Amino acid sequence: MAGPGGGPPRRSHTKSRKGCETCKRRHIRCDENFPQCRNCTKHNVRCPYMDMPVQEDRQATPEKADLLWTPEIETEIELWQQTGNFPFPELFIYPAPNPQYFSFEDLRLIHHVASVSRELGNHDASNFTIWTRQVPLFLKIGSDYKFVMDALLALSATHLAWLTSCPLAANIASAKTGAALQGLHEAIGEFSRLNSDAVLAASLLLSWQATEWRGWTQLMHGTSSVIDAMQPWKNESQFGDFIAEQSTFPTAPPSPVPNAKKLSTPRKADLDSLQRAYAQLQKVESHLKANNEDVKAIQQLMTFVRSVRKVSPNHTAAQRFEMLNPLRTWLFWLPVMLLQQSHGSPSALIILAHYYTVALVVEPLFPEVGAAYFGSLSMGPIEEIARRLFSINVSQTSDADLQTPLSLMEYPIDMVSKFRNRMGWVQPERTASFPTFSHNSYGLEQDNYANPTSLYGNPAFTYSQEHLMTMPLEPLSATAISPLNIDPYANHYLGIPSPSGFGGYASPATSSYGEGSIIYGDHGDDFALYDTQGSGSNFGGFVLPTVWI
Image 1 (cartoon, rainbow, N blue to C red):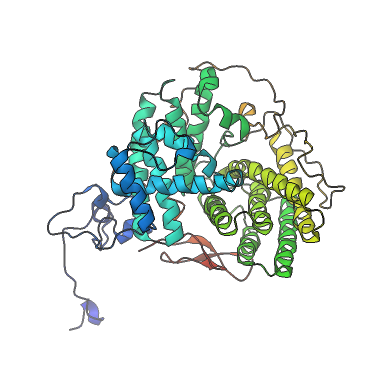
Image 2 (image 1 turned 180 degrees about the horizontal axis):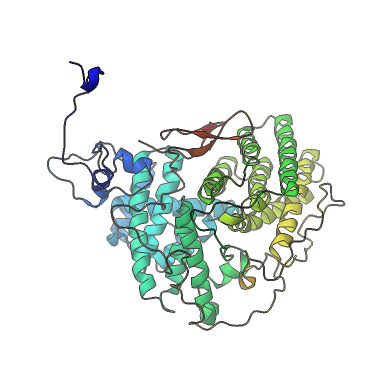
């Protein structure tokens, strides 16, 4: 039968009142997939189904999340439950997590991050990643504060989801993130010297997992505000050594309002720097090919560099943040995978150093979205990789092949120095354990960035790896900057979304490439606007963030 006006007939469909509240509110059809419907997954929001008990007439998804179980892991966790002895005594965690307080699935997530930390520690490779070195501290704090453990479990589930492309693992990460956010919100309401380390730990963990610009900005401003509030007792903090050794907590840069019309236009000098970075990646690619080694990872990075150079003032802050998300995801997860697979081979270290270096190079192109934060995370691993390659080179000087990887570190080290100048940070005095190069091949002019009160850097938290002298800072009182007054939009830290929408805090394993989102093409240099409907891209065998439906 013809439809109204003689058009095609309307398709018949069944009506249901069991759709989630978010879909009902948006007047769209819900597929009723439990515990996360397709629409909520597509838009990177927490589905209300996550907060509903499983009803008799609603069967949960029959499959189990792929958490990379093995018989050995199951045996270790069962023994942990029986004896109460933490399976990783070499991590020196006290108090260790009590297995009686966690489900078998949660114990698997704890086991995963602890095993990664132990394995890289055994290979003396923890300093080559952003997060694995800090796992014991997070586990220790998480043993006393559930919201910190929830944030760490979310990180673990996110990593497993990235490794397995399992949507159920991603759902676990989303649920743990929601619980961590709620607990963090409550802890901030009672912020004190006693719980400040826990608030800082959860803020840091959640900032690593936020994939939406505004949510990340809230967390970064919150982290900076918490650090400022901790000034009177910072020497008592469990993060004292961490803060002193890592430039991990720069103050988040002033962010534009969500609907700002114009953002900065990339400078020609910065675009030229990006071109030099691409030329350097070509050298690395040639080295890998000459040694018959896999070039997929470096080619994936080259594709990203080609694409990102087309950033323009027409891109919003949210779009610019999304442009950085693939690189940001790689910085967190790719180093662990390469180090586990290669046991820290020189070529793998060279590849990782250049991933971190690209984070430094792209920073001037994305000042409004806090790219300096990603750059500050990358300096330490680059310098540690340089030390390791230098040590290998000194101990095996007769091997000509080992000279080439070290020479490829000249560019990353130059970029670290240039980044420090741009941030207005003090250059460290290098020791004999650090490689030196006879000349500068990259035309690194002295930029006019040096500023002791850089917008990006809090001088109190910009120490280098070399115990350098820093500028004196007037001590702040605990009330000088309220830890709550940091959200640039709402004058509060971490305005928790309603249970029906934890938007903006999905894990780096997922991305909401929805209508009008920016993704990268394998061919060509431009960003392309596609209606991807949740499709993902695959660069050289490494899967970029995608939405699972």
